[in-house]
Length: 446
Image (cartoon, rainbow, N blue to C red; front, side, top):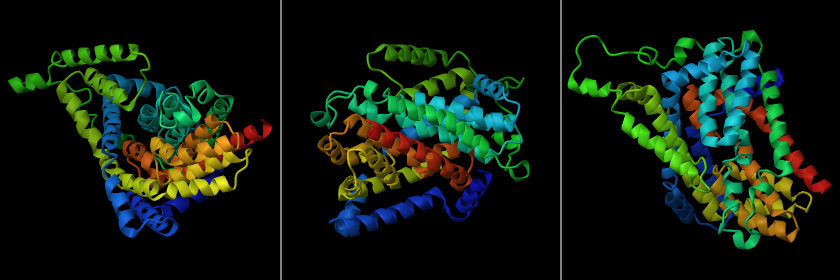
């Protein structure tokens, strides 16, 4: 496993470009495939790209805020101490890798946005407490937990088809989560990944002499001098008194916590990106205590958001080409042509993994593939709930090599995509075998 990991790591270090360059290459590939494989003209493809370029702006802002607010909360003194004490539970780098993986899996199962950021933040604390741990691997271990998100409580596809009047309800009806998220095959996949991912990450640990470590001082982000600071003894100006006031934040914090209680008492409420960001923001203000410390944390937090801001519009353009030109539809139909009732779930999973490289959005991917794959499932008498989950798991699977979702984790870690992708490629191969096998055997045995 170590030799395989070293090979993949060297491969990624040498040939994987910066995620922004990769987004440009994917734009070029989507353009060429759309022009050569569909009936779309050059001008039409350009229009699809331009019309969709800014369609992810609300989502981009949500992702920036999940990064910033999560980081703000983690930099607050009480949460900072909590993460440190949790990291202190382990005695060796190997134990640290396992604990980070388990933490991230659990957090991403609860809510993908919450897990994506908190897992990486916990990995940073683990690196601080275990100086001999391989920093690249512990961040990759945190990101590997993201594999389970679409089989978890915030999975967009299973939650979508469980709501009334979803866009395919006339074709497949409303499917409760008991037939998707709580179905035996989904629970088997989750359990298998819960066992295998920590083991694989532990086995991938490089020998001591080959580990890439990081100095604890570099993980402080320059906040060590203010995180526990108090105002100077000299008299403060009225403006400074307001900045350091512990009374001023009380009202907005009280209002925010009260709203959260009201929100979760409403039927059907759950952990959406908006409510996660809201809670992180309110708790961040509460835990920092005054506006001055809070704004210091904001300054530190926004430094890593540049990649998200500049790259997500390009992926929105790529999605526009794939969805509007019919390229996504074409890919799905090619896999359907090879399928039988026994193999359709497996081929659906594989096709979803391929489409996800161009459409890294669960909701967007469902809109592209479901109108093609659900009729095929009905024609072959295959459970539509299982096909929906095959699309969901395919979407989650190739996120391991799609930098779109790694950007928040990389921003937290201060790493480049090539630093962790060698490890993530192993996650891709191992998880692909597990998920594909469950979908295939589940169909054959039925």
